[in-house]
Image 1 (cartoon, rainbow, N blue to C red):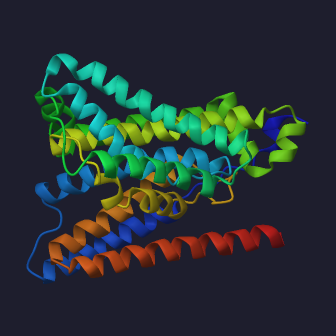
Image 2 (tube, helix red, strand yellow; image 1 turned 180 degrees about the vertical axis):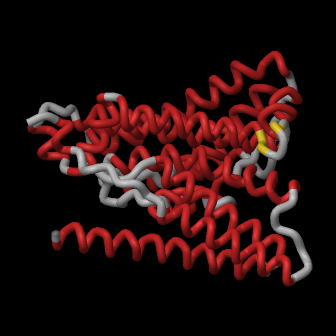
Length: 324
């Protein structure tokens, strides 16, 4: 039996895009009645910037969830990578590439640690990645009281604020990362193996898949995506920020975006295209609330409801899958 035969039939995930269209239509009408304008350039640019930051993390989160794992350390990886990048650049364009390379290397190291804890030490992914995240939190809290380092002007002007029309360069980079992830999942052996491991690890192992290597690679890629999000946020903020990852709720919101996009938390079914739809949905809701000047506490409540609803959808799908 080949690994390809283990893969579930790929299904389109139009539901999240239908929800996105309905949300934008209702939001446009409500904002219009309130005397505002949702579809103007400033709102669109802001929405896509928010989507870019969350999208990088969510694409990486999709990879580990497809493999039946999870990563709760991404928020701290984001914060750490902003500091590594900004402090290494120290305002110099000459240190731009080394700083980005170092930030991504540190992020990949965290992902490697996560993957080894999950595969070699057989620690539950929830506990392992949460523990690593808390270790990073301890380092950040004990060494940083606030922003540190200075992002190079070249990175700020390009990745942070440059646009092609109303579309930020960062969002175009997100589309490129998404396209690369889609290609890996649908056209490479690693992608097929990853989905097979998430669908049924024992059957995948018996078919010759090296489950541990696949999951370690997925965790490294996930942390790399979180590191890329950190570099992007450093370009927006102009410095490193030790709490930007946790304050942005990138761990929980990335999981919510993945599940809303049609990927099962149990693994084995889903994809990055739906994840981007989930990211855009969350960013659109945030943009609508900002236009309506909704109270910050109420916005957090709505985000919590969205996460709960996403998990409820996952639970129903799991029950249907078990019954079929």
